[in-house]
Length: 194
Image 1 (cartoon, rainbow, N blue to C red):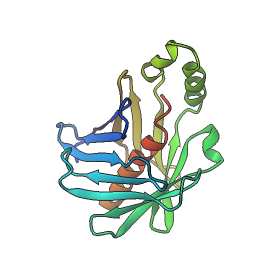
Image 2: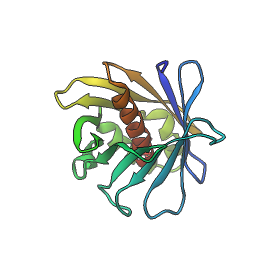
Image 3: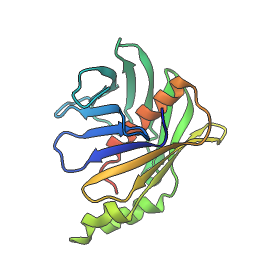
Image 4: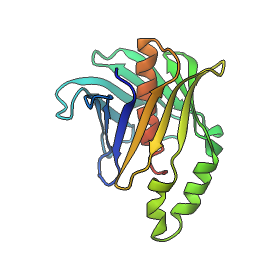
């Protein structure tokens, strides 16, 4: 993959759609969330026409604060998952990334004050619509030992949300896939913010 990757999320669509492109503008993933599902079901495709399904992301339980979202490849084999860290995420977004049973990678919000300011700013009539341009959270993907391996930064935008993904340290191809799918799922879960 040619980094940095750009993740674009349209805010004003009924069914959430995310496009992931590389530095050359090539579409790597097109993500479409199914509507009106009690259990989250998200398809990850190789193109916007949705001709080749690459991965599925499915919740392990019906709508829950701490559901685990499992990733499966096109053959149905589980390749990992991500889970929001319950109460710890109220103040600062925190997600654990799993490679089946173990969790060596984590996503953490870099500055929790952005979350607080965003919540306050959105309550101001008319000006609240500008929060997507003014407040831009950043997330770090870390190993358990604290080594930062990847960074996700929201870019200023009005009608859509744009994020840049930049590698910091080496990841195996499987870890890279797990991290990217986890970041996509986190964006879907945190989309109401900034």
